[in-house]
Amino acid sequence: NSEPELSFIAGGAFEGSTIEDFAFEQCKVLEIIGVYAFNQTKLKKVDCTKCPKLKIVDDYAFLNTTELEIADFSGCSELEEIGNWAFANTTAMKNVIFNGCSKLEYIRACAFFQSGVSEMDFTGCSSLSYIGLLAICKTNLEQLDISPCSSLATLEIGAISSNDNLTYI
Image 1 (cartoon, rainbow, N blue to C red):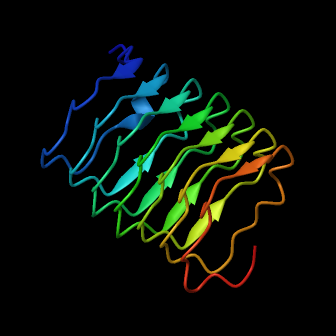
Image 2 (tube, rainbow, N blue to C red):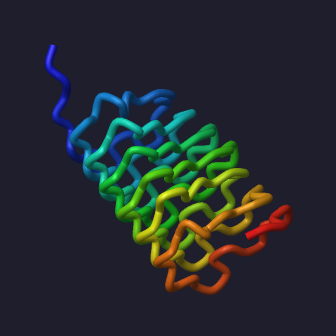
């Protein structure tokens, strides 16, 4: 039983399907989750903790995946970018974990727009330099600790805005 050598999930690969679970933990060489790859699916979690080579979650990858509750990228030491609208309209989202994503540089425009996210963990994200237009907007966040992001140089207009419960940054 050899493990799959999946390095790229193509754009639209599962778009609109009823898939509820995907064994990301078996994708040890996965580098890119493509544009619209899981758009409008029934996924409940994205556990990439065993995907150390993951570099890019591309634009719209999980857009409108309304049953998605958690996205865990801890252990993705090569992760560089979360694309435009990647997790937008993920209304059931609770947690996003980037713990240890030391090469994460970019969270693009509207990446988490209108997601239900209430907790985000940026521990160890010392390379994060850019949070795009409306990237973390209209969420359920109450607190957001970006202090580990020592390279943060650009917060675009409304990057962290319209979060009615947010009381601490």
